[in-house]
Length: 237
Image (cartoon, rainbow, N blue to C red):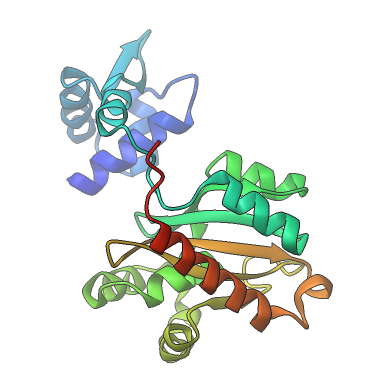
């Protein structure tokens, strides 16, 4: 039930024109009657609002954000990504695991295609992204196995090789992908920790020509920067 509620909220957040009850049921492959009870509860608690038979995100999520008074990841500043981009000439970005998918929270890039993915918060497969792989490698084993067990058919061939890669990723302190998400892009990512817990990953991406002779240096750079940011602590603002 909790997973379905999360799906409903994400659908509402992504559709600026709103989502009808029938559309929710179709997207969730669930009976209208069962979806309606969940939607009604979300409306009653302010997580959804109804207008002209369409549902949009309500005020409650924004109120929670205001109460928290902090960004999802407080260790990394936008200026940190700007410095990485300036130092390497590559796209620099910050990502998290959200319900078994990689989501990019912040970025600095000159690539319009990447900017679109990042700014629309389009979910990406964890196993195909450097961000996802380094997050998985540093994840609690029970959650890791749950995510891998539920990987879709396209990702299943990647599961066994990834499990073999985990010790090397942990030892190096970074993960690398070579064209898994897009054939014309490679990437490298290192974990971001808060209070000893991996909460995000910082990454660099570029073309194979830009990165082929430099992956280890870039991985070490990200690992070292991430450790420096963790020691510096959260941004008090």
